Each structure stands twice: as C-alpha cells, then as structure tokens.
Amino acid sequence: MLTATYRRAPGLRGKAFILVPEGYAPKFDFPLSPESARLTHVEGELWVQEIEFDAREHSFSVPFTAPKKSEAKEPTGT
Figure 1 (tube, rainbow, N blue to C red):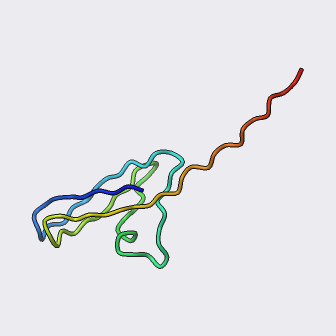
Figure 2 (figure 1 turned 180 degrees about the vertical axis):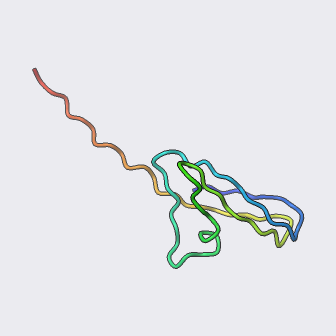
C-alpha cells in the first residue's frame, strides 16, 4: 500500500509520477473508484496520477498486488 499526502494551493491541478518496482502492480477497484480512475500506466515501471486540489491537502492510498514468489528450486543430488 502506498499512502501519501500532497500539499498545494486549492484550485490547482497536478500530476504525481510513481515508480512501481518490478513485480508489483496497482490493484484497481471495480467499478473504478475516483482514485483508481486517475492512475494511468505511462510505460515500464512508471505510472502517473492526476490530482485536483479541492483543498490545500490531498491524501490518497493505492493498494498493490505483491510479486509472486518464484518456486524454490529443489536441490539436485549427484
């Protein structure tokens, strides 16, 4: 879960760029919530979130799916 609070003058718009580590992916609500709808994949590990400041502070949380653990290799005997 990524949680943050942005501070900016009310009435402005902005974008936050989020670098998501390989193997993780944002977990979207269905139907899309307003927060999920504003998160867009740019390319690779880069995502962007559009923000509208109705107040001085804007808090958000984005849940992520964790990377799948690779299957452990069994030791081979000789």
